Length: 153
Image 1 (cartoon, rainbow, N blue to C red):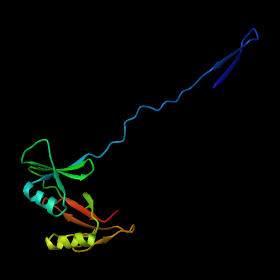
Image 2 (image 1 turned 180 degrees about the vertical axis):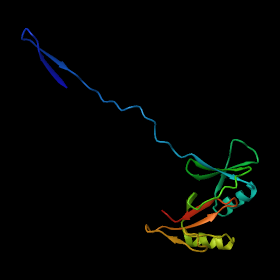
Image 3 (image 1 turned 135 degrees about the vertical axis):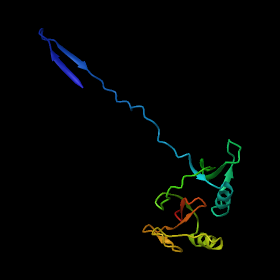
Image 4 (image 1 turned 180 degrees about the horizontal axis):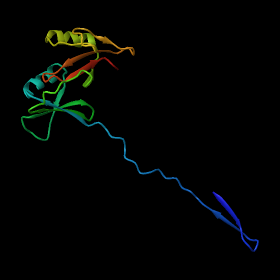
């Protein structure tokens, strides 16, 4: 901004105002670290997550018998914690999601293990085909948590 003032004696005074716009210090975007689920029977949950979803157990700092940590993505974990879980109603819209290379192979595994899968409408044995070309099914873990399985790339 340039300001020009004419003084009484005919001289001009020029003033420069320099505005420096610095970014306001802001917080970096939060990064997803982990999800935690309560389990009434950790042994059953461990069997489900390792044999159905093929998740890998990773070390946890508690080194006890009531926590299991799984690697679910680079630098992202899922904690399953044994406890007195709330019997709250679990809705299909409240779910976590894992992608697999083939829905056909995954549903065959579910059929072999006699695990019911559903489409979004809740129809058992049906695969959902989304408008974006992704196929998906929904299953429940031993504690009733909904899990979407899809073939998104």
